[in-house]
Image 1 (tube, rainbow, N blue to C red):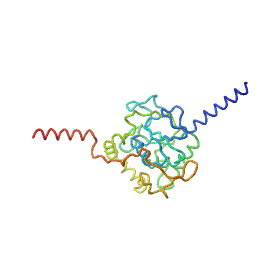
Image 2 (cartoon, one colour):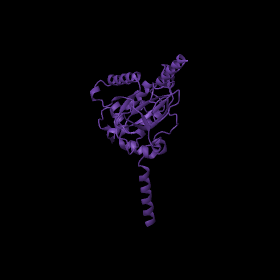
Image 3 (cartoon, rainbow, N blue to C red):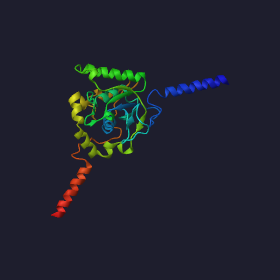
Image 4 (cartoon, one colour):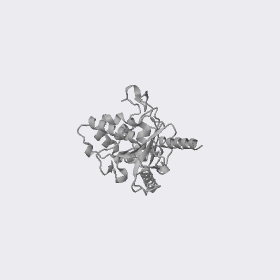
Length: 269
């Protein structure tokens, strides 16, 4: 009986270890059993969420949240010292790969901003790519190396994108989730005013920007990518079928103010 009990204990330990090869068992979000996840910090999580859900192949869900090894427990938008604003990307490994999603992450950040990202400044807006195990760390380093090879004038010592061991993920408040879908006008206004698109084009080049933000997947040969097992598969994006982003002329609150002023003026006349 002792032998059977010992074998059962070993089996359970192995099972627990294997279940933590991707992600963190303490995460405030549970992915589906056959899916995997990636954690990245790209500045404002609204924009990061929209980018991956609409344009990155094989993404099932991008969840806005907070993460930081020195952060407080149960962080909130008003109280998250020591945390990055992050997104947890749940993906189907049969339809994409960790490496490809890391490539998308790099092309959606400003690697030279040491104070934040775009118009958002402060430690919580700094960029970072997180790894859950040694295999993932090596993949992230390989992608960074490929970036430096593509842009030979860049220097790794001036790239403000740390590769960090993955901490616990805490899900952000519900009003932050899918903000680009819930408030398309407000979101479009913020993104344009923040200068995110313009800066990404300036850093990476306009052609590269469109390749990583294209619902038609025109830069992919035959519209295919290689999944986690190295199998060539059709690229699938925008699983939520969200409409093309709207470039808002002004936020909703401003529209309401202008409307009220117009009503007052008309009534006054």
